[in-house]
Amino acid sequence: MQFEEFGLIEPLMRAIGEEGYATPTPIQEQAIPHVLAGGDLLGCAQTGTGKTAAFALPILQRLYNTKTDGPRVIRSLIVSPTRELAAQIGDSFAAYGRHTGLRHVTIFGGVRSGPQRKAIAKGIDILVATPGRLLDLVGQGVVKLDHVEVLVLDEADRMLDMGFIEDVRRIVRLLPRERQTLFFSATMPYEIQHLADSILRNAVEIRIAPEAPAAETVDQTVYFVERGQKHLLLAHLLTDEAVSRGLVFTRTKRSADRLTRTLRESQILVDVIHSDRSQSERERALDRFKKGHVRVLVASDIASRGLDVDDISHVINYDMPEEPETYVHRIGRTGRAGAAGQAFSFCGIEERCYLDQIEKLIRRPLPATSDHPFLSPVPRAAKAAATPAPTGPAMANGWKKPLRRNLLGRRRRR
Ligand code: AMP
Image (cartoon, rainbow, N blue to C red; front, side, top):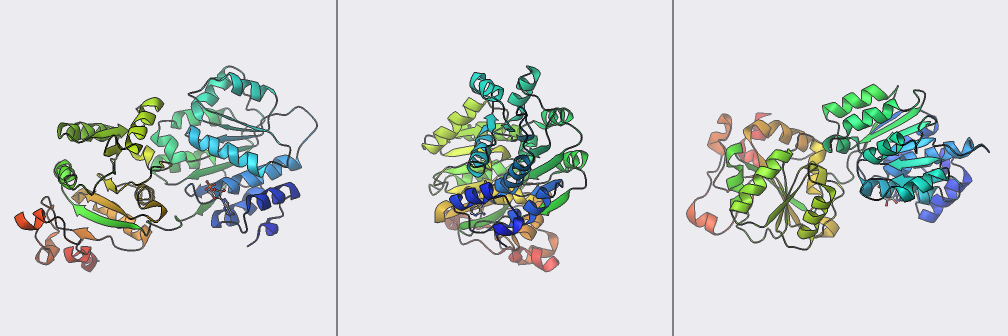
């Protein structure tokens, strides 16, 4: 498919050419015609798939074609969970809309609101915002949302993770009921599906699988281990100096904090980021990790996307992610730019269903190793086939090549 086939206006086609885009990405192919036709959309896609253009181009076209000579009012609102993403979306509107004469402003917290107020007061067509700052400025009467025709909620699952869902509901209540809504989320946990159901009307659903499911450059290994022994397994793996920069994911903020304390007690240089930490604490932790002042960063999923640190040697899934797409996001933090990376996943007995979902998504089994001292009981049917964890000398020599998981009998039982 070609961009010409969408019937996009000349100012947009010119900008696309200047951006150097030759053909639409899969999400653009599927979303653009539908959004141009005015329909609601539920897009299950992550950043990096070209989804910003998938919504920005049709929005710009709609606003351009219905421009009036009257004063500018906010006709499209894009809500983003983080300032980084908001800034990125704002840049995309600037790039794609550069020949349209439409104006946008990006607002987020953590900086003075004066310049943002001034920019809004000049009159804008499009507002890109994080939820907190948006509600502040609405409360002060600076932002008026009663002319919004198109709402975009981007990275909705991250809004949930960051505790913004109530804010999002409040924002939606401030908008005209008659509008077009575009809802994007990389993963679809129950709360997000529920939120989508409550605000979308006759939406078309588009699912874009991650481009390269589970980065090819990442060597992936599963460790079957009981929940109560995971911290011991982690400490054991960290005795290997090859883990030079390890990113450890936990499912909850509490377990992130608890694990961080335990690692500190073992004299491991570690920091933690999750959504209960302030922006400056998060930035400081990230900076220390980037500079190598700490060897391990413990994170809840807030960090699995958008985290751009070079040379992460290992991603460790201390808890298996409940959403298989999250697995792909998490391990995508290592093995970047062609470098080799390792991903270890600690899988408790109660987490094996998550492993099944991941394998379905990435369309292949993950190799498991029994080559560690904390191997959890192997399923009964497979016991005879399992290789016992090596002792003494084998461990001292480091780890052996991971065993294929079908040695543990999982595949055969299917
Ligand atoms: P996004 O998922 O919107 O963050 O886009 C990811 C990257 O892909 C951005 O750097 C875009 O500039 C780029 N991009 C978006 N659409 C296309 C396209 N059709 N062809 C080439 N690059 C694109």
